[in-house]
Structures are given as structure tokens and as C-alpha cells.
Length: 417
Image (tube, rainbow, N blue to C red; front, side, top):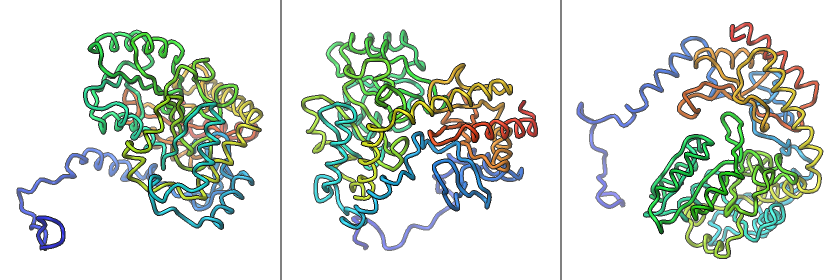
């Protein structure tokens, strides 16, 4: 026998009756094979051979404009951010090799959490290894068996997975529907623990939530509120704190979740809160306790980026709004159908007739020298196929004009417009 309990030395031979655990993926395997057989380049396996700046990279040997990276504030090549990472690499080495509750808390992790507390003006901050783990950890820890999580049907996969991991009762409601949310909360048994989970900006269509009204409803029913500001941090709000700040309700939010992989320009996730008992989360939150902490170079770049966004983010935010307005109007004028009637965030989603033509349009744009995201069901709402554009504060006015020309030529070639 091998060291594993009850494990044989050799795996059992497969028989004709052995179920294939991959069978559930057969429709997706066939769909992908059909796309590739039609001569379309794999839209989910693009390789960037070299990244030149926050807005350009070499893809397939071509200088390509990047319009699908979530690098909203363009911090990935900021000289101060890069220098901070290099210095931390020299001073602390390449990794921590441990959990935050063991040997994985370095001075840089504390400094990063201090930067977050200052950025949001909150008492507590907790850094995770990814944004996905932040949602997974916080939701599953505070909402367990017997508790209820009321969430928007279009919530991110990490939110749904956090609910499942915690084994709470999941109560979804129609996207951005305040009345539906109110009714769901009203049906929850008296005295049960209730958590309402919302997102500031929803990543597929780029639309924002009516947080002011929704948070008022949640509080009326005695629910705690968690808002995921992954796609609004750094950009939306007077200080870049997100949609809750923009709508004047940040003080009414119990937990704010965010990520470093978008406006901050590196990788990692976090939760900030004013709850007086929040620090116990460091001992009871499994995705925090049982995973290695971020490398010192990563938390150094994150802390530096966050502080720069506090100090100098205003002009970047203003320019990014101009980019978003111009691209949204330009695509609308060309005849494309967009996910929102007006620009609400740095995401502009272009609705495609179906997956096949969406993939063809994606490839036509790539050949023009433009990279966007091809988003398909089931990740998208209402089974839509989307070309999702995410603008950057470093996109120049000239680049936005070039992008519109690329969309016009590709759209006509594929007969979308």
C-alpha cells in the first residue's frame, strides 16, 4: 500500500462502465472545436509576447492596442510602483512560503493594509492573495449554515462560490431590482442572520447598482451589507472609493471587497470594514488562514499604487471618464448595440448577435491590432455574447479615435453593422 490511507499501489483499470467525469463538458468541448474548425483563432488563449505599456502589447507579432485588461488607472508601468517592487524583491526575497497566521506576514503586508485603511477611511483592512479569495473567504465565514445571503442574480462567480462554501441559504433576486430584493428579504424568517451582497459595477455590461436605495432596504430588514467594488475602486467616486462613495452611502456598508488586479495594477484582494469584531476574521477565515500570503514585491507595488491613487488619481479619473464617454458615443453612432444606454463605468460592452459572429468580430479586431474580451454564456447575463471593452486612463484621445476606426472596419467586414 502507498502512504495514502486505503490507496492501492496501482490505479484500478478503467472499464467500459467507468463514468467519464469529463462528459459534463462535452457541449463546451464541441462548441470550442467548432469555432476552431471554422478557422477562428482561440479567443481564450491569446498570448502577449511582450507588454509595451498599459495600453499596448505585441500579440501574434503585431503591435496591439489593449482594450480588455481592466488596467483602469494604468498603474502597471508606473515608475514608483515598479521601483517599490524591485526594492522589496531585493530586501525580502521572492516569496513568503507561508500563511499570514504563521510566517507569512511581512512588514509590507501591514503597510499595504495601512494604505487601504487610509484610502477608505476605515478601521480594518485584510489582504488576501486574490480578489476571488477575498469574496470566497469573507462571505463563507460570516454567512454560514442557517444564515441567508441575498444577492443579485448577476453576481460574480466568486460571490456565488463564497455562498456555497459557507453553506448559507442563497436567495437571488433580479438584477438591480430594488422591489424584488425587498420582497426576498421580507420572506426570510425572523431572527435569521442576513447578508446582502451587491456589486458597485457589474463587470459584464459595465452597469452600476442603485446602492443608495438597495442599502436602505437592506438596513430596513436588519441585514448586513457587503459591496464588491472591484470594478469601481480607483475610478468612481470623489476619492476613487467606488460607487458607494459616489452615491453617499459608504458609511452604511459593513464590508467592502476589492482587488489589486484592476485599478491598482498588480494582484491580490482585500476587505475593509469598520465592524468592531472584524479582526477575528484573521483566525476563522479559511481562504486567508490556509493559503500562502502574497510575495513581498506584490504588496509593495500594491501599497505604492494605492497611495499614488490617493495623491494623484483625480486627473487620471477625469481623463478616463472622457475616454469612456467618447468610446460609448462613438460605438453607438456607428450602429453597435451596447450593454448600457449611457456610459456608467470604464467598461463598454458591445452586444453580438451570437457566439459565432462574436468570435469572428473578435478575430477581425485582433487582425486590426485591437484586443478586447470575448465573453460568452454562461458567464454573461441573458445568454448574451459580448465584446467587452475596458478603458484605461493611459489611453490617449488619438488611441480612442483609432479604436473606433477599427471597430467600424471590423464591424462592416463581419456584417455586424
